[in-house]
Length: 235
Image (cartoon, rainbow, N blue to C red):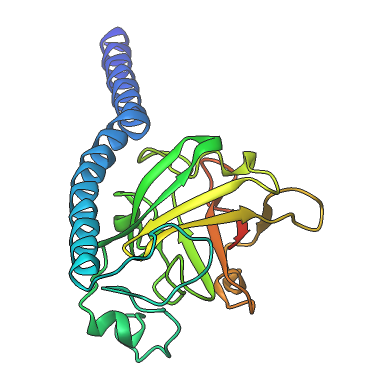
């Protein structure tokens, strides 16, 4: 009888172990496949936005270059992101008026040093971040005046911000939008590093600082949400 009970317990433990291994495998690899599929769709949609913006510029007789390091006025579908929040799901008034929805692709971020090349979307809900980096709706849009903030995973779901702790002062971050391509330079923190660690409720990181910057945020340490790692870059 005892042997039979021990046998049942043993089989249950083996089954539980297999389930745990399957869960870990999904977290490490399965979520990446999910995100890759989403990124493929987002990239197609964003490329279409770029093509439409260029066609509009050509039709208007535009002769300006699409690459700059200075903030410029919007020419098509994105606002400057500095309006007062009217209470519409936390989104600026212009954003709601233009029909930008949470989950819509609004730009592309490239950081050559750490191999980042992702289309980022509007919104930072956990369900949205499964598709890629997300833009804090209450902040400016990247490439526009003010503080533009993005969040992304460091583990699972292709971990777009996995290596942002490796960024140093002077490293470059590029952002592509329908207005053009904007280059940001990572700023040194007081300790000389290219990042700093803050608490999970440090909402001041998304506040306007009186300059034009890009703020990247992710959970810290890896596999934990106890703190946040923040990288700030100036336009």
